[in-house]
Length: 488
Image 1: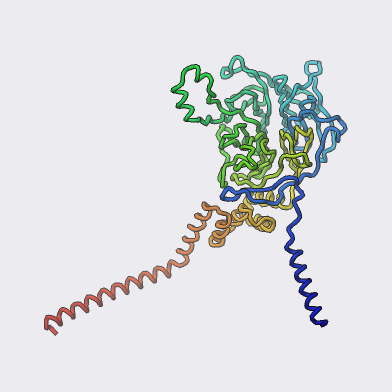
Image 2: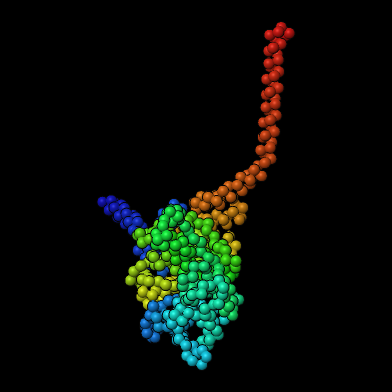
């Protein structure tokens, strides 16, 4: 009896252990859904890459609520500049999100000047602050102490219309002081000014994507009908950023565009790599049917990575330098970490910041173990340290076994080490057909080279045997003919 009871207790313990291990993991602490897309453009669940850490409002800083905040920028020294557009002021925080000062205006020609609904700002390596002072039709440049350096006003140029109104919205600055301005109603491209504020020209005009059905209909229409039709006008840019090499990243506001993100070289040509499974344009399947992504900001993260802010679904999409979608975070809602009306994003250390006009606050996101591992592996690959990246990619696969980019990363490392046969398996798992073909060709060449001597020996032996067989057949036939002729 005691033995039977013992057996039942052991069986019960085993069943209990099995049930415990089969219980689903706890729900994600994120107030939004994290996902990615596979090769077949199917949305698949993904671990959270970033989680909300805290929010900061004007009341938290003791300066009164933000009003229609418009932009945020982090200086190279780590200070955080929030453009509180509705209050016509700039709020400056340190790297720990503590208030340093508030810039409410500046002195010009002996009198106090204020901002008028400014739209964007940028801080350069010398802590000069560039403000797109939209309502005053100018760009204001202040030094680190808040003193006026100069202003950029309506440029004089033969390529501008006589009735042109200069209303700067967003801007960025390169290392030599060239200012790139996104201006309202300007379809010719991004306006470029030199370090002295002189207008140079346009950069990166958006291509017009025609509806040829409408084009044919226009040819057949009357003058009055044509006047009511939509013109084939290029799309405006929505925001800009710049990387350490001087390439300008820009987003446009056309939801129907297949290339809403551009990386412009000094000649204004788009050199953004798009080698991923699908187009680099935010969401691709219109989840919950809100429509295509409307990209309103772009942030260069370094090591080839960049993030874009989608105003349709209030999400952040991050890509590597080859155009692979790394992760997605954010979403609509009233919870901490969800967004109501996002307008700008930035990076501060390993944190990502999103400015939410709808909630009048700054949301701070910190990377999870998964997000930090992906960032590290991508950075190592970008720097050519693929061997070191393999260990990180394997950690990523422990957290997400469906992460195709990790398989591709490991495969590329094995390819660099000339382990072509092993690389084939990883490229197959990552559905990277192009890399698989490269690995297969190299593996085939490797096999041919390794076994060439054996192949050659077998080929010579086979040829020799064929010759002997033919000689033997001929000799036998001749004997048969001679025998039939009575010669033998």
